[in-house]
Image (cartoon, rainbow, N blue to C red; front, side, top):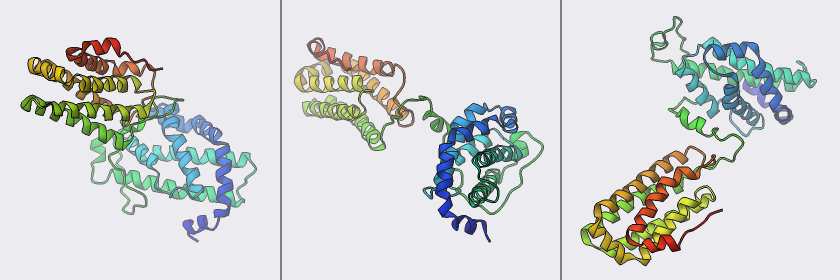
Length: 337
């Protein structure tokens, strides 16, 4: 009887097993963390065990529970893909990876035994079979990462890793580890990132502002200034979707939009006499926004003193306003709570 078939006929037990592991989630991770062989392997390879359990162990266990509930497909865990890339960049040996993986298996087995699920229990066999199927895929995938490379030369070690031709799980892509870890920088806080649609719209707006300014300079067309005002109004509305984290920046853009609409003629006069200064400030705002969008598409906006990040941009916007409508800054201060 094949492993896959064996797992499938025991689906009625998998939810019970998933519930048990969910309940003892912290216990599994603690046993994995305290495993002396796992600690030794990780430390020998320059990896803090707590760091590993936090960034990889917890998510791998969550995925395994999802597989048990039939919410996830075996061998398709994206966290494992990132973990293997992390390992490959550090040239970790295959036998070390086996020790790490078996550490998780042994931790789960220990929890099962602690809860009276013995070797003869169907749930016990189901867990072991599923672990074996998944981790054999992990080993094969790690072998694949070395295919076509001189691993001895690449890692400056003496024992090359053998290649297994048959592949059972998704190949590792070029996942950026920096993006993966960025999501964990604000522990205990809600993770808030730019939605893809919002990021795309904001990048388009940033690009369009430069184009509209150029047309306004060339044709002395105040309609272009009105279009720029509308762009900043739309951008402000998008930023307010992420309240309160971007309120200050959204408020300054709204002020600029209002100032451009109320003082279009004054802006055109200032643009004619101070073109270089105006364009330099708008370029600074555009550059800042591009960096913010790129950053907060992968990194949470929730951080201590996040408003300080936006101060240079807000200052540039206020400087623009004071160049053609200084009274508006004095009369239109907006506070956000």
